Amino acid sequence: MSVTEALTLVAIVGAATYAMRAGMILTLADRQLPEPAVRALRNVGPAVLAALVVTLVANPEETMNGVTLAEVAGLTSAGVVALRYRSLVPALAAGMIVFWLIRWAV
Amino acid sequence: MSAAGRSFGDDDAHTRLFGAVDREALRDSLPIFVPAIPFGFVLGVAITESAMPSGAAYTSSLLVFAGAAQLTLVSLAGTVSLWTVALAAMVINLRHIMYSAALAPAFSRQPKWFRWLAPFLLIDQVFAMVSPRTSDPPERFRSYYLTCGSVFFIGWQAVTLLGIFFGSFVPASWGLSFAPGVMFVGIVVLMLDRRASVVAAVVAAVVCFVAVGLPNRSGLLLGAVCGIVAGFLTDRAPRREAVGAR
Image 1 (cartoon, rainbow over the protein chains, first blue to last red):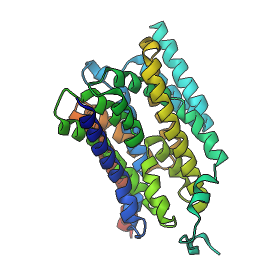
Image 2 (cartoon, rainbow over the protein chains, first blue to last red):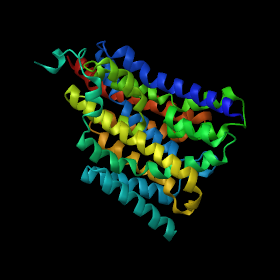
Image 3 (spheres, rainbow over the protein chains, first blue to last red):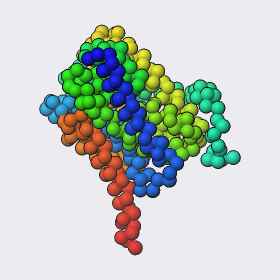
Image 4 (cartoon, chains in turn brown, red):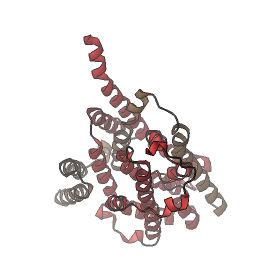
């Protein structure tokens, strides 16, 4: 692939990504959204990020989407610690430590 | 004067852009940035192995600034047509439309320059961090957003470059690529403040898990849409009961 082709590809994806990120902000910021739309949009964060976690961990080419016991335990630990301490640092530490320990032990 | 009544037409954009590093945002951003480091290394290695020239592939960090889409871009380049690569990367980024829609009301009291600049920095982590801040005063929201976004943008450039030069020295057996998933679980849990948000997250995760084999990671979008609808219906349920009881 030539440099020109590569830069063209990056520019196209960059422009499209910006359009996706900016589109709704630029068109809806000055409008009063209907109440049902506002309520629906409040669920965007939890829904998209929960699906993102699954996408990051799962591998569709393996049995049970390739999710291991160590991964499930790590994610669960992170969730429980985040819920208990309302902080991301201990959640991240707990999740990774449990993941490493179980992977090492099994 | 209320914040809503201010005119932003005379704002000194330069002062507002560079003169307001939000220390709280800085403190919040750093631990969330840490799990992105292994991802940056993975991307760096992928860039060195890509059919794209490394310098051109690196510009994706500057112009696209979206890890998963960049990984798709550099991995698929040279293996399928140019438009197929572009389309695959764009499908992965479709979730940003939902982020944009969710944050749009918070921009009603923001100046035009910020409305145009902020979307460029709207990545997953920044969305997660600024979402709970939408009811902050406009200037506070702006400084928090810009500081978070700048930390991630500058940091992402650095780790991508480090990944290009040193990524191959980190053993895959360390399993560091698992870290972003752990971080996002923590972020999701901190967002669960209502029954509807719990339903939205659970439904999204289950549907995405079932549909994870769909092409171009479109299982993510399907899961997200199902979760949003399920959360919306959960919010509506008590109202229906109340109407029915009359």
